[in-house]
Every structure is written in structure tokens, then in C-alpha cells.
Image (cartoon, rainbow, N blue to C red):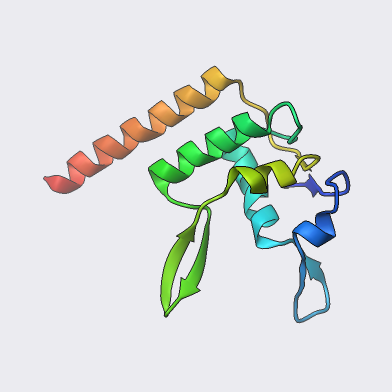
Amino acid sequence: MMEWRTSKIKDYETKFPCWVDEDGKKCLNTATYCLTYASLSAGFNIITEANYKEIYTRIHMQEKLFGAYRQKIEEGEGVQVFYTLQEIKDHVGFETNASPKTRAQFTKQMWDNMLRETVRKEKEAK
């Protein structure tokens, strides 16, 4: 089960207002919610002052190759919403229970994913 903590993020409630569902339960801001699951594929479990640029770079790479984690509706159409460096920096202190990956592990994972995508596209073209 995915777990996360926002208690160490400075001014979290101000930066990332949460919404309340129909049952009155407070829910994570969309940026944080999607970041929770991005931590699984990007291979991090805490965002710090020392690593937020690395995390942004990993997420940016994934989003450029596979599409944004988030979307919004504009004029009835889904529009991709990419993470910014500032959004990741503003999440310093965010923690999840994802398994961390070294840069080499992450890079290999990205390479393997792209290779699978290439093979899939080649099969579809036949």
C-alpha cells in the first residue's frame, strides 16, 4: 500500500491547498497526489534540498517521454500539466514508502521502457 507524508513540507497547506470530497474527507492536492505515484517510477522516497533537482530531472524525463502525470480540462479538451522545478522544490520534505533507485537503476529502467515501447510500436505497424 502506498504511503506518504506531507508534515515536513514547509507551508504545505498554503502552497498546495487540499480539497474535500463528498464524504467530507480531506484529500491530497493533485500535484502531491500524482507526485506520490511518480515516486514509484522515478525511484525516490523523500524530497530534500540536496536532491530535488535530481528528482525533477527524472520526472521531467518521464513526462517528456511518456506524457504528463496530470491533466486539466480546457475548452473540453485534456491538456497535459507538466511538473515544474519550483513545484518539486516546494515539495521538499515530502516522503513516501517508494523504493529508492540509483541514477544508474533509473536510467536503465528508462532505457528498458523505451525499448519496450519501440518493439510495441514496430509490432503495431505490421
